[in-house]
Amino acid sequence: MAIVTVSGIRGVVNTDIDEADAITYGLKFGSFLRSGTVAVAADTRKTAWLMKDAILSGLLTSGCTVFDLGFSSTPSVFKEVSLRGLDGGIIVTSSHNPPEWNGIKFVIKPGRGVFESELNSIQSASTQPVSRYGRVFPNRPSYVEILRNKAGKDSAKGVKVALDLAGGVGSLFIPQLVSYQGSITHAIHGTPGIFPRIIDPTVDPLIALSNLVTTADCDVGFAYDCDADRLVITNQKGRKLPGDATLLICLRYFLENTRNRQIVVSVDTSLSAEDLVREYNGKIIYSKVGEPNVVQKIIENNAGAGGEGSSGGYIEPSFVMCRDGVYASTMILKLIRSEGSLSQLLHQFVEYHQDRGKVEIDRKLAGEILKVLAGTEREPDMTDGVKIRMDDKSWVLIRGSNTENVIRVSAEAKSAQRSGELVKDYINKINEIALDLSKSKPT
Image 1 (cartoon, helix red, strand yellow):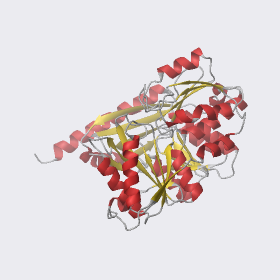
Image 2: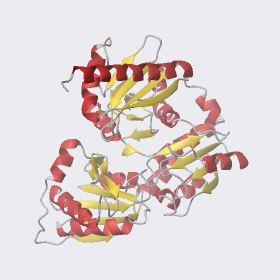
Image 3: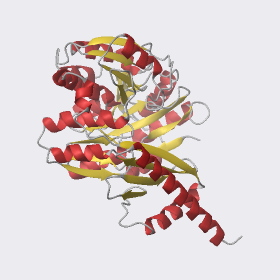
């Protein structure tokens, strides 16, 4: 069975999701848009054309006018919908999931992802064909040219960068883009549709990229996922950095070049972001974990930027209203050139240490466990799960999984020892509460 969330409909092709599903969702989305205008693109998975053609059939049968962008990134579809004033967009992608997966991600006017109520409306929309069959127009996405102009010619001249393109859509344009910035470029895994590593760069150890960075004496390494919305960086020694590093650098660039210093980040983002925003006399707002939740808070508060530290996802709504790993790359390269090195840049941020763990628990009990846990804490933050802030500038976040029978525990502190202790302490508390609850229930 396919996973259906506001982040997209995803699953293993021909097991969880197939052509018939794609046609149905094309029809439903076309009905939801009342036969409007739609941009469609796909990532480089082997099932891309199969799924995209099926979606096109559904959209055309519902009377939509379709602009086919071919192989293109997720941010490019968001940009096309915004730029052209289209009614919607669809990306055939399952983003960072394994190669045998594929999926459907919806975009609506003015160029944002769908929220829960809109997803429900799409799910319940009609699948009846209309009398007027739609038309499809092959189209070149405007995104690359716009980003090229925004990045600026020779804006990162002389910076040596290693690229791990993961066989994704970034293979088609990222090397040319960073070369336009004047960077000296070394690339691996640049054959579209061939996936030599785990597609999700936050999970893969990125050994090949690390080796390339050190052997080619590069200043930085960039690793992307299949649809180029996710970015992970390595330093000049080839060490993979946490997602918060990507977000922090981009926020620093943004805060230096804007007046709107309201920033939205997910509750699992490092306190370094809070320290940085306060340094620029800005305001930080916390959202639930997940890109759609960050975007919704950005819109509600008219914030200038935001993101998720855990995935390194940077979102700047005036450019695109989704995370954009390629746009983030262009900013990081410019800052490395102006600061002299990545290490010099990172040295400016307050360093914290994060640790994570999980407890195997039936997710039906997770809500009850978190409720009991919250009752034992002083002023817990209930934005998403239970977040407890300590007096020593440390925190712990406990959240139930929506898809697995686990409760996840994340912690951050000034030392690795302290963050590790917090994770262990709260895993013990969760187990104790679970045991007490099981004893109190009738057999």
